[in-house]
Length: 430
View (cartoon, helix red, strand yellow):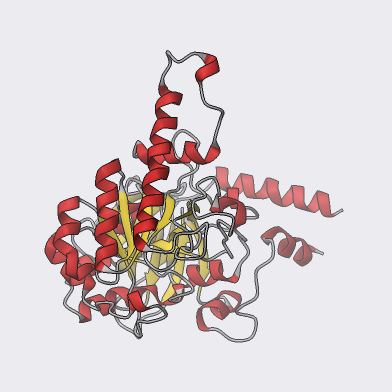
């Protein structure tokens, strides 16, 4: 009986998808990020994409109209560094493990996913931890509702999974042997691994090499080949100004595309970061600490980086800062001298660029994914609430829904993982 009901639900869902009506959100203040703010505008979406945006949009006769007067619509927020989903990466067997995939260690029903939707986050870079020089491959995800990681993971045009690779330096990877004991040894181990990867990649790419001379397949080095040829971005944990410069040095030596993460002292070396053409994913915390190298976190990092011409974005590093409070990071940036437009871009389009996803997400533009957030006020006000979060034209958070509101406001059960949507539907039918 359960199987028949489930099949009927699936069929109904498929038919609804096939007959999907356009939806017009009418009367809101639209902040497209790419372009001027539109007062009393209309956002038209259909089949998971943005169809039109503007003050005078032709709304199809069959469209569902949703009045949103007095509301503000932003693109879905992009979190470039998060650990929601109980993600786990490399273990203590060694300091460099590029074959480990975050994809294989994510709980898609984790309460952190629900809280992130409540914060307006629609796209995330899920990262393994930073206790290794290289702790594994990251995965880029949409916070859709789904039963497995495959339902949430973003795929590229060739069908491969979108993601980067996580590296770290500073105090985090300093441990007893076989881990490095000093900063100098950390760089030496990473440099040696990159040289080995270059040699492996060259042999794999050499079509003239005899079969018996070709190297055996190595999954970790395959991932390193993708990093060395620029297909996989290196997301690099680093805090202290001298550690930042070490990352830039390695990136220059091996022609790596690098996003610097945390960069507590970025303001001290903003010019060096700009000259290297690197991007910076930064965090704002009220009480820097936890490790000596983060004690001197500069609260005006965003303003300093912007002034130097560095593309930067904020991230949550959830659970270091709560995904529900992501908008607050940009507000604090403005408090410390950042301009408003850059602050909003640092939560949306700039993060999308760091993940090579700017053609799909990060701004409200026709043709892009219909990922957006509906707010009840100024996005930089502490009093503003996320009312709704939409991903690819589907609502994934609604503050008016008590089950959703729990994960926005907290209370008993807010830390509980969700169950499969299908199971809830089946129980309701029975």
